[in-house]
Image (cartoon, rainbow, N blue to C red; front, top):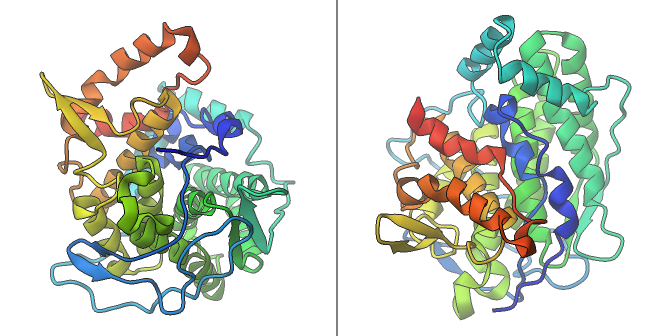
Length: 388
């Protein structure tokens, strides 16, 4: 199986998140993931035949992709779907109050985590957004780093506003959100465009979700940001889960688990921020019963004696193995905050997690893995869930 990598340089973002930002673990994912693929097809999602949005481009090709059609309109919610909670992605109001209380008590790791975030200077009020109409990844002249820097700023600014109640940070966060929603129209690139849709759409939605309670963010601006997510990020994420860049019928497991999970997270996060229960159901159903490597039945593909589950990317490197686990944790935490328990699906949180730290120690001892051995702080989402 051949996979193409365009992400070795992405390791720089891996350690931007600490325990304090544990409730916003999107930052730890950075932009790292890799794989490869070609043309397009259809597949069932959650047992129901899913199709591309009408007129959507069937696959990603080398070079810059053509724009996808806008996302379909909302459908009738499935029976039993609960009211969508806001803020309700990686951070809830309960989480934010706990952070405020811990900081007021000068408790670690919260104080240290806040200081780590402030050191990045991402909440600098003099910073200016640098929006792009076309963001590309995987081709000459790729420019996705420019967007990554801005959504990290937006998320940090949103967090700082929520924690301190200083409106100057809210205004600056809205400035970044509005600049991008009024400019960005397309994602392009080779197969890596599906990493852009999965890794970045999710993080934009998390930043915006924190800001939706800010009365200074005009309703029309919120609506425009929702439109950007639905028209630019969702169609690509949906298309990948349906077609897997042309490998759906030929070999659906051609792509690594992190590709699936990144796009599942984006569909889920957009569903919450845009009040689209149909998108939430699409992401949840795929995780429960999808065919790709990231689905709950496939991401831990072998269970050794003693309930030691082997992650789908364990034979690669620590960076990608922990990325997939972190993404699964993000998805499950977002679902948990919406009243749905996805932690109980599959083997990942029953057998794999107890072995993460020994695995890391073993890889660190082997020189050929030293440069890629990584502990992603967002992996803590999973054991923390069970230790509460």
